[in-house]
Amino acid sequence: MDTSSDYLPPKVWTWNKSSGGKFANINRPIAGPTHDKELPVGRHPLQLYSLGTPNGIKVTVMLEELLALGHEGAEYDAWLIKINEGDQFGSGFVDINPNSKIPALMDRSGPTPIRVFESGAILVYLAEKFGAFLPTEPAHRAQCLSWLFWQMGSAPYLGGGFGHFYAYAPTKIEYAIDRFAMEVKRQLDVLDRRLAESPYLAGDDYTIADMAVWSWYGALAKGLVYEAAEFLEVASYTHVQRWTDQIAARPAVKRGRRVNRVWGDAAEQMPERHEASDFDMATKP
Image (cartoon, rainbow, N blue to C red; front, side, top):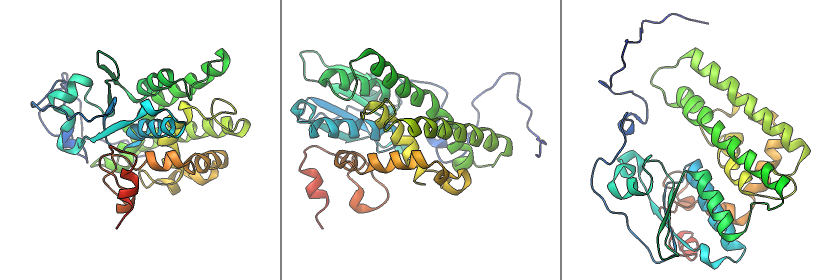
């Protein structure tokens, strides 16, 4: 491995140049809003501000699954947050999520609006609110939450680590790619071993843990992110492949993955979602 480098870290790091890469224009070392911008509010109890990335898909899949179960209170408006244009730094969005990351949710069903941010927290909030997709039996609940938080802790290695250095970084760094590829393959092995012994991550039932993990690792398993399917030999994880296909076939998942999507096949895009009928309208020529 080539270990040579002309870069010597300074004693104190300063932000005096662009970090480079695909997302350089939205990276900065400070928090808070950059501009004043109120967020739109629709007529439904739940207002979602998001984008159809793996983290955003977790929540839209959950909402569509809840609606499929007949929970009318889960009706929602999904507003598009264009992160490449800095929408997440608008004052209205920062009021909901001070971390300026999608997704962010406002529950306006009660007398006082409730803000919820971080995708895992939103999944737990909705599961508890509607009593669905989160087991109540202590052992099964612990299993579900363990896998949910496994995903929340692991995704930075996949997205911010492997995905950044393999697909987005302006310079390919062998050490960084090797380091994160090794970790991502270890994570895939963790999943494959679990799914060899259980239909779903928490046991026999489909839960929020599957929704969260599928949005990231299901996409990776099918070569939908980072163009790394061959590099990581994802087809070799046969139990992950079985589980991925099983979840992808669910009608609510098919709907959820379209919401706030603004790239790829035009028939699969739905920048905003305000009514269930929007799916029918989106498929018309």
